Image 1 (cartoon, protein in one colour):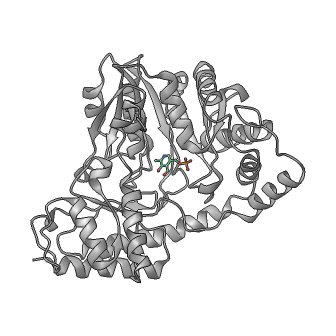
Image 2 (spheres, rainbow, N blue to C red):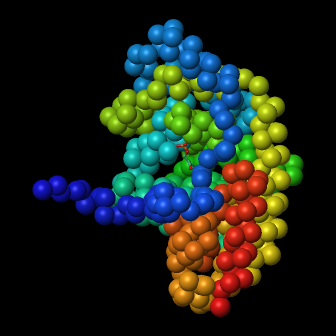
Length: 400
Ligand code: PLP
């Protein structure tokens, strides 16, 4: 008999995996499913990154890499933080892991004790809460509703901080809402954190380059240098360079924290793939102009999806500043019945009915801690996106 550890009792199965699985079953039975679920760019990895990986493999970079990252990638990351964020991290203040996800996991596991609290703006990428719980801590959500553009209000952050607060997680541009933070907004958040010396900040900047209409990115350690020793700045190549499968993420932060996280990594994975790291060096040091073109393509798609969703009955969709997600409110659809005869009482039921009756895949808001919403990724071909939104309009129109 297999007995699983009780710590797994607190880890929810991923909603996007559930929705993707059901989409696959429908597709296998012949339905043309439009998946607005994907959390990755639909662009290819840049060829210069692929070539660098190929070269690295042929040249024999196939042995265990140094635990915290190869020398070339740490230098490339140092240059990146300097160039793009005005942050200067020494090489031993940088850690490379298997994606941003492992970096975040290392950070929580290296610092949390039972009874600690982790403040997470809600809605949130679910892994933050699950990782906090795996570390024995309690996630403390702070609501960032659509009525406030899904932004974190400093006074609400202040009210959530207690002597047990270990981390505040910041993720702007945000998954699932696309909301981003101006310099002034980040300044106000930094002012709150400055008043609480026990609090560290986990700044998840994965969507840094996915910002539209001239919105400028900033990260908290850059906005308030006095917080540098309490901030972990996390990033990766997945979303920026369309390299989700290469599994390379990285961070810069205080030396003692990086040391603890490196120990954690040493007992879990032994570091990121040497080939993936070589590809990431080429991406970080290579041409960056195509990022603007890609962002422009996402901007056009964001405008399309926001406009079409706002025409759907019972749906209101905020126009966010970045990422490739929107998180529309579907309250006007709750309490109604689908053409197939199902009564919709939750966003999970809405998402499942939309998938099964209109063949459009989304992820329900409850999976991100805020209902009734759905998360829609617009990182798919514009024609499919238009078709998906038209089906949502038709589905909502058909609700009685
Ligand atoms: N942070 C956020 C907010 C994300 O949405 C994701 C991926 O979906 C990650 C971190 C992890 O990215 P990766 O592990 O691919 O670097």
